Amino acid sequence: MALFPIQGIYQDDFVVLLVPIDTEDPMTVVAEKIAHHAAGVRVPPAAGELRIKYQGELLDPEVTVVDAGVPPLGVLQAVTG
Amino acid sequence: MPALRRSEWYDLARDLNWNLSYVTEDEAFPEVMSNNYGITPNEKWWAWDEPYKVSYREYVHNQYGKDASVYSVNSVIARSRMFEELDPGWKSAIVAHYGAIAVPEYLAGLGESRMGRFGRAAAWRNMALFGTLDETRHGQIQTYFPYTLLDKEPRMDWAHKALHTNEWGAIAARHLFDDMFTANDAVSTAIQLTFTFETGFTNLQFLGMAADAMEVGDLDFGALISSIQTDESRHAQQGEPTVRILVENGYADVAQRLVDHMFWRSWHVFALLTGLSMDYYTPLEHRSHSFKEFMQEWIVKQFLDQFRDFGLEPSWYWESHFLPELDWYHHALHLGVWFWRPTVWWNPDAGVSPAEREWLEEKYPGWNDTFGVYWDTIGDNIRRGEETKTLPETFPMVCNMCQIPVVTPAGFRAGKLESPEPHIHIHEGRQYVFCSEPCKWIFQLNPSRFAGHTSVVDRFLGGEIQPPTIPGALEWMGLSPEEMGQDATNYAWAYEGLEAPGAAAS
Image (cartoon, rainbow over all chains, first blue to last red; front, side, top):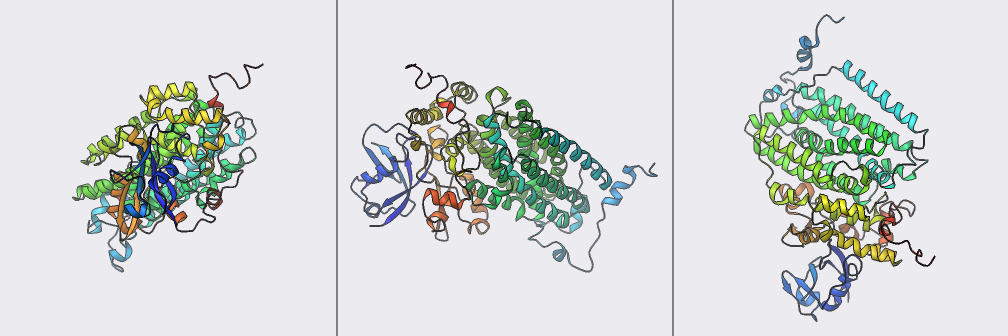
């Protein structure tokens, strides 16, 4: 387990955020950690399951950043569907 | 009565150019101080000319009169209650202005004095001497005026303090001004500071803000910046003849690149400073134009005319990036500055009451759909008493060129960008993050100039900010709890047009 910084974008938010996650976090948790800073804060919570998009592809909800080959400060989007 | 009219002696006395014999040209004008971009011999620069043709005696006489006038206004107003009665948003605009501008005026004096020594024609060095004195005056006057307001607004000391801190906006200002004049050679400074920045952008800041100041009733600030602008319009004339020499000697591409580089950087910092002041901080009833309208009148039109006059082209990013950003970029920055308000030294005015939103929608059709929705959610949180949800728990990513938060998702949401993602660039193994294609392009023009710099986020991740938390970062930025920005109207905007809390029960 180790702290791991990513660039997070929550669907429909206006800014790219520095979001600390853990290397063991599955993408479901990564999505929650991104959403924490925007959903119900600046944008209404998204209706539907949040997925993580990386380099244009939706990642499997159970993989970690290590599994997916995401580097430190990789750009991850939390989107519905 | 003088024996000679000025026109009979001025050019002869001013143009004291001579061929060097004791040292080489390279020794007298090292490239790092004065890049000739291949235009040799130096005599080719001696055609440099400017229209003001002021003698030193006239200069001193004029400046004495300006100072006597504007300091008199300040002396009288300091004994009144004018400042206390100003709108809170306007106070924020001038607190922000002084912090961002006062000390850089002294730094601009360094750039002017470099041109005063390393400008490649005597006429140019003469004008730059006046420019040095101008900028020294501007530094003095813009630290003195806020000093006289310290008993009414303690954060006026950020006029001197801001540029000496690691506050993120101060880092953005330092990065820009170091690139533009503190660490620039004389020829590039003439084109980037005087031709690009002063001829265009400071006109916007000083003339636009002077007009708004008079509307608001801030005679002190209006008199101050109107006085400064009279100097700017003179010493800004160093740019045009320098561009002309480059163009006439076949180096239009060099001039174009220098302008394109600094125009983009100036645009971003002015969107941050002036965009917020004009469209959100200035009281609605006193707004004469929107920021976009000012930009179109003072910047877009003026630069297109200048490009045409000099045979230059509109910058490659003009249509694809710059014009679209006029519709969304500063709105996103405003939202960010307000949300991260503890990180700035002024009180951001949300400026989104129902009447203000109506004005924003009129000036920027689609504003409610794109930006109003964020303020809807924030307003709901305020009204529910959940202020903590309106304050940051992490940082925004920051651009490695302009040092301003990356707001590409807002451009995507506004339909102006194809992707919400930032621009990533790897240089010598290090990853750089950019907010826009032009910021990345500027880096790639001269990577060695910019590669060593670290953004606030880089410093945070590198362990320079301890403890690595928001409070730790605020302390690192030099912001005590009393200095941190708060909502300028204590959230009055969130309740305007609604029944006051508790009113139904009474």
